[in-house]
Length: 278
Image (cartoon, rainbow, N blue to C red):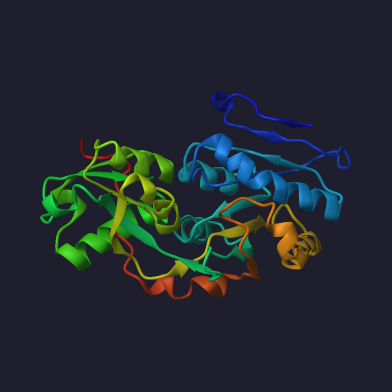
């Protein structure tokens, strides 16, 4: 039976099959609201449970940093990670092993980040100075990292010349900009496009980054188990994937640490502020 516990407990459990005494613990990134995230992943996890005879639990965290910390502490078997959280994790935890990369709606195994504003306000926002900017999370590829780079390249300015605040999920950033609470926002392009009908428009877009990946903890999972999960996901046909969430239904490719070679060549910020400046 699928049961959602209160968010205050930080854990949402998906319990379908009693086949294993100890279920595998999976952590999604908190890119959207908890219930949206769970509904996105439930059909895929059901598929893995049925295909492999395993039991899975969703451990929901409130930030990317929390997911990475739990992974390093050996509390997770699997996690859904963007490239910046993955690189941060892998740097201090080489047992993190990419399993598959999920394709974007375009079918590509890469994605982009965007700076957005409302269409009604864009003409009055030509100068990016002392503006209110909504960000996702410190350890989000589309957060401080991507927005800082876009602002430097496109407008020769920085987040420090403006006022920024972390809001958490990408959809919270989109809605805060739509409501006029912020002048700009930074988030995943695919999620930004979901709000175009509310007047959200894309002002700048990043180069492609490696797609979000399912990452296994090879300290907790045997190589054969990791490969079985990879093969099961690669074997899922279009009819099966159609039942999965919007962000993960468009195809998968086998992944490895080599997927991130290009991103490792980018100038990562020396430090990323953990708090906004207003």
